[in-house]
Length: 231
Image: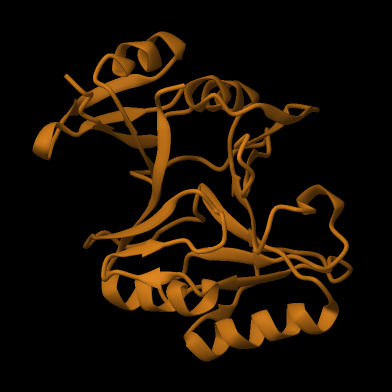
């Protein structure tokens, strides 16, 4: 498959500050506005400026894994030390994962040890997404990643090379108001744009340096960067 997931991009009021938080928490190499993984995750994190306020729960968030209860506590303590904060999104007292927010309010979870679903996925266990079964099928076909879960309208995919899962939780969905603060950046030859449209994507326009703005079947924005092919 010729479309690759290159970056998960955060829109941020202070991109460099947010990059430092995530670099410190994940231990990834910080290249200013970009973090490069050193753990087999397979995609980068990018941080771009925005003046728009955060007004709703994000459509995507990280699920970080733990090897033990002490390991979970250490991750939570490190996140708080770096500028994160506890977050109440209605989780129940008996739920064992810890919900936090980064310095700009982006939600993420530190999952309890012994989670079989995220076993062998690494520290970044999943990019957990609000979305339909249809959009899970779309991204599976778009990236050539196999479905590793498809039950009760919930779907998940994972790269054949390993790394995190990308999951979609099915209904009910959080109403989408304005652009998402997190979005995918994919790379591929220009011919792949039409294939993505045929799979259910919408072409929104062309931006700087030929970057194509698109939306998946749920209306979530993503960017397509044209990768030059050899002559």
